[in-house]
Amino acid sequence: MLTKRLIICLDVRNRKVTKGIQFQGNVDVGDPVEMGARYSDEGVDELVFYDITASAENRSCDIEMVKDIAKHVFIPFSVGGGIRNLEDMHRVLLAGAEKVSINSLAVLHPEIISEGAKAFGNQCMVLGMDAKFVGVSEKIPSGYEVYIQGGRKAMSLDAVEWACRAEALGIGEICLNSMDADGMQTGYELTITELIARAVNVPVIASGGAGTLEHISTLFEKTSADAALVASMVHFGNYTVQGIKDAMKKSGIPVR
Amino acid sequence: MESLVVVDYGAGNLTSVVNALSFIGLKATASSDPSVIIRADRLVFPGVGAAGTAMQTLNETGIGKAIIDVVKAGRPVLGICIGCQIILDSSEENGNVKTLGLIPGRTVRFRNEPGYKIPHMGWNQVDFKQIHPIFKGIESGRNFYFVHSYHPSDVPYACVFAETTYGSQSFTSALGKDNLIATQFHLEKSGSVGLQVLKNFSEWDGQCLQNG
Image 1: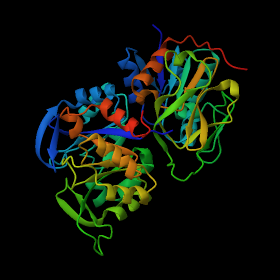
Image 2: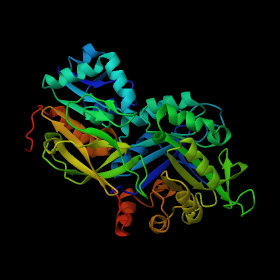
Image 3: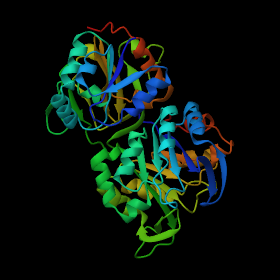
Image 4: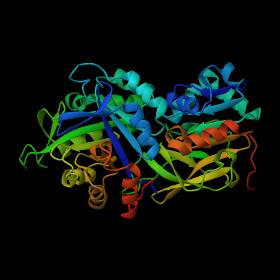
């Protein structure tokens, strides 16, 4: 039986893993390669590395870092931030990443999804999506709007519609980040997670809001999400990978 | 010194395989040169991508013939993912493609099943059906990492070393014959158990006892 995945997200700034609260007020928590290797040894199922300043600095992602990670991490990992075109994707994949994650780029140039899927396969294309509850309207029927540029720019784009369109274009997976829940440690935003998980037939990773073991169990009990993404929970040492996996197992969730 | 060669035929990512081998202390050379491949003492044949495209490259470059020669010479050969499919007779991917035919069987697509996404992607259990030296020290039922939409099928019982279940579909996830062994799962992405299998492969003399 395919297990539900626990994914750890590492936001990287100047080669340091950093953790912010609602996209602001970041603190550095360690070295990305070291932390990635440690989490991998502890049994996490997958890792995501975001080069969070690449876009703002208008550069491609730190490829030397990706190569370094690939020499020490032997589980799947994806890389996002600073993926500006097919060439960037190719370099990241050749460096040893399993998948690339695109967010603003995909919203502004949706054709990049089909081009990437055609060149490298759907399985390595991840759509990162930042969604925020803005209330149901004609323009935003689900009530959740897509934001880009690290949550700074509202796009008048409905999150569920965007997920479906991205799937049709060939995205292989969707990592849905709730901006309302991000860094708050009050639990995942279950409503939008389930709306999207039901609307598409590609795996959905829930992101933003995990703070307790119960939040993770609740996610898998109440939604059909395929994976739970955590950051603060483990970065600050409050929980371990093993502790989270044990709790998932206890709740009857299939885990590795 | 024994030469360990990783076949480079343009089908996706070799870096991870070379990195994994290097991490466990093995020096591997990636090569697309049939004259290097044919002289390998030990060969790893990885790959992601489509079987049709891969087969075309293997035929055009002479790499396919070199792989067959290494297998026939009795030296240990390990296929991973596409490398596990291409050693069978044919593949449904990209129409009906004739593949290397080193082990009887064919590659077919997962049937659509409500609630089960294709590709089959993530960690799933590998249940051993026969003992094999490359799985030494690993319990049956451990999780390995998979990413694929097609899987081996109709492999003779004697060549099936492991099975995995996705939804209601059970498929052959490790297969082999004599000095040739192949896994549908990614050993280079399966954490410590994957590295252990690679290590076992590097120490394998190419002999195995098979059922039937």
